[in-house]
Image (cartoon, rainbow, N blue to C red; front, side, top):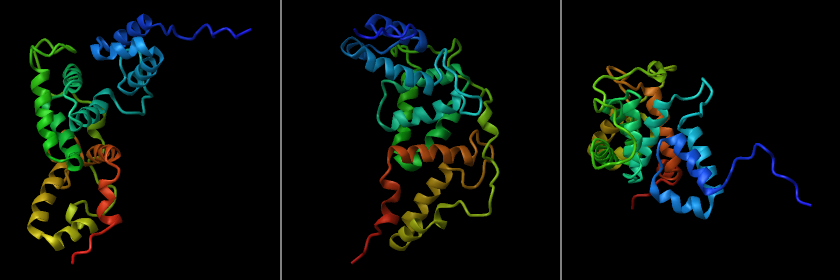
Length: 239
């Protein structure tokens, strides 16, 4: 005789899975429906994870963890770097509803671009255009459109003061010094871009301080785990 399912086990029928996902997220991309009907438990597990990760309705992380707005400032550049212009505009509409501005988004995307490459910033621009287009049908824009003023969020006050005395400029690292020995002018220009992206000169009038930008950089490295260590792990021998 088989054991009875626990009474609190969720209904895994496709219709119930879709209903819960729509309630949590507000809507659902139609391309997910084929998966839901073919393997409802797979999508159920995806939805459970994503709802917690992005703190969709009914899902809240501990107070010591990242806010919704900071999570989206990591997620959107990651989606754009992958070329996912289907889902990224939906997330941008969400941060607009949360009171984040394009300036905040581009600061986060710039930090991500120090790893993913500056062309990823153009995909953020394309995602913003789609998010503000009436032709994009997912998510909701605020009634007055994109925010003109930033709504403060908890992480804004963090990571603005250096804890130690070590230098933060790219040119101070062994990898960049090696690059400078090959092409000092290219290295100088590229390092200036990277230093700008990670706010190596300090927070100034930025939304995100150097500490938060470093967090975004670390997340970007997790998407590209090999490249950051390529030069230091296997330095080139120039014949």
